[in-house]
Image (cartoon, rainbow, N blue to C red; front, side, top):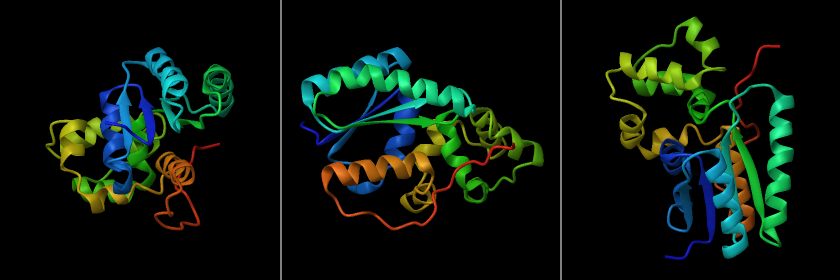
Amino acid sequence: MTYDAYIIVEDRTDQQFVRVLLPEKFRDNVNVVASGGKSAAISLCRSILVTRQKPTVLVMDSNTTDEREINEQRIILNDLLLQAAGNAPYQIEFAVPEIESVLFCDATALEFILGVAMTDGEKIAAKYNPKGVLADMLRRARIGGESDFLSTLGKEDAAKFSDCSLIANITTFLENKLQLPPMHKSKFRRQIELPR
């Protein structure tokens, strides 16, 4: 099958997150590919840019909340991809600090969907360890894990997280490069606010 665009992620969990949260209009023409780690994701992204010459998004966990470190990572990745891209458009997106942070962009919606309230400690910890906090919440909700949760997340519930900057940025890039009409006009994109 031929695709109009590609999204490269680090692993199968990231792949499932992006597939579930990506607007439905992209499901048939955008291939979300799990690569097997950071180095493999970069290599695969470079290969797709060279061989397919299609719009490509590289989604990586930043593994940090430090903006300076994230910017350094972005510069390095941009240098690596620019050499391979030619005329193919690409975008680098970071899940800060990991893909699970997308669900905490609207923590109230997550609490409602799971039927579990976050403690004050979890609200703070979610900014730095979203994977761990989500695991605790899923355990309390008696859900087997991230994969089980994502596989049962309906379209309406998934749409509650579409304004998160990661998903919104991917959506905007794809709409622009594939010349599709925008899903919706949102004034604000939700981001996790880090304490200063």
